[in-house]
Length: 482
Figure 1 (tube, helix red, strand yellow):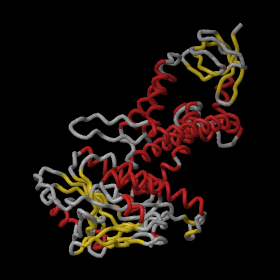
Figure 2 (figure 1 turned 180 degrees about the horizontal axis):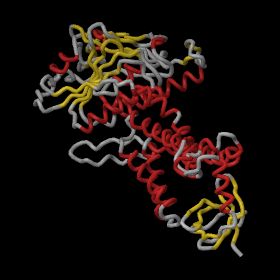
Figure 3 (figure 1 turned 30 degrees about the vertical axis):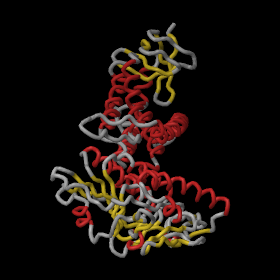
C-alpha cells in the first residue's frame, strides 16, 4: 500500500481520548462550518486552495473547519506547507476520510483534532518513497537517505500526533517499516497483547480497524467513528444547523502555481520593459510588455491567496510618483524616491503570506520573518537579472533594426526616422540648464523641452549650463557650455 503514495510523503496515526466521539452541544444556526476538499494529489496547486479556504474561514469567524479527504498522497514539502496553513486556523478542525487517506493524506488528517471515516475507507501507508528523476516510477532509496528521511518524517508526525492527542506509536507504524506495533486488549477481564503491525510492514487501517478501542482505559486507535456521509457527520458532531460553506476549486490554482514559478522572470521583464519605455519617447511596446509582466506577477500572488488587490494599488501609486518625478517635477528626488519605495514594498508583499486576525479585529497579523524568504530571494534574482538586462538593452538595442519600431511615434509627432534625425540635428549646439545632476546621465531643460542627457563621463552639477554636442542612442550628449 505504501507505493500508492506519491514520493517523499509521510503521515500519522491517531489515538483519540475516550470521549472523542462525544459531540459538542448543538450550536446555534449562526455558527459557520467551512468544508475544504482534499480530493487530489498533495501537490503545489492544492496549497492555493487550502490557503484561500483557511483565510476565508478565519475572516468569517468560522467555528469548524472540515477536510473532506480522498487522496493517494503527494509531496512532503507541499504537505508541510499545508499543515502550516491549517495551523493558522484556531477553531475546531476535523477530517472526514472519504474514501482514502494514504501517505500525505494520513499526515494531514492527523493534523486536525479529530478523524472520522466513511464505510470501507482506508488510512495509512505513509512511508516516504522516492520517485525516479524521470517520474517513470519508484526508485530504490539509499539506505542512509531512507533512515534520515524516515527519522525526519517521524519527528513531524510526532508533533502533530502529540498536539492533537493521537497515539504516537500508531502514527509512527504508518511511517517506519522497522516498527512493530503492539497494543493491549481487555477481554473478559483478561489483558492480552495484540500485534497490529509486524516489523517489515507499513501500517494501513480500514475504518473498522481504526475505530477499535484498545488499552486501559479503552481509547480509539485512530478514528473517532464511521459515518456514512459528511452531512450525517456534521449532524452527529452538533453542527447540523450551522451555516455550511464549501470551498470550490476554481482551476486558477494551477495558473497561480505557474505564475509564481516564473515570478522572478516576470520581474526582470517588467523592470527592463519599463526602463526602455522611459528611455524612448511616447508610450509603446516596451511599456506594454513591462506593465503586462508586472500585472502577471501580482496576479500570481492574488490567485495563490498570498496577497490582495491592495498591493497592486500600492504599486500603481508608486509608479505614478516615479512618472511625476521624471516628467512633471524632475530633480525633486523625494517624489521619485517615495514612488520607488512603494513599488519595492508592493513587489515584496505580493508574495508574503499574511493571515487575517481571528475575531473582530480587522488588521492582518504581522508575518513572521520566514514568510519574506521567497519574495526576497526572487527580488535579489530579479535585481541582478534586471541590471544585466538593462545593460544589454542599452548596448545592443539601439543597433538593431527594430529599435525605431519600438518607439511610439504618434505621441512624439515624429512620423519617420528621417524626421527624428532632423530634429536631433536641429538641437545640436543648443544650450540649456541641467535640472538634475548628471552622473553621467540625467535631465536638462532646453527652452520648453526637457531631455534625457548624458555627459561624456564627468559628473555635472544641477543648474549648470550645458550644450548638446551629439547623441548616444536616444540620449543627447552634452558638455559644459563655455
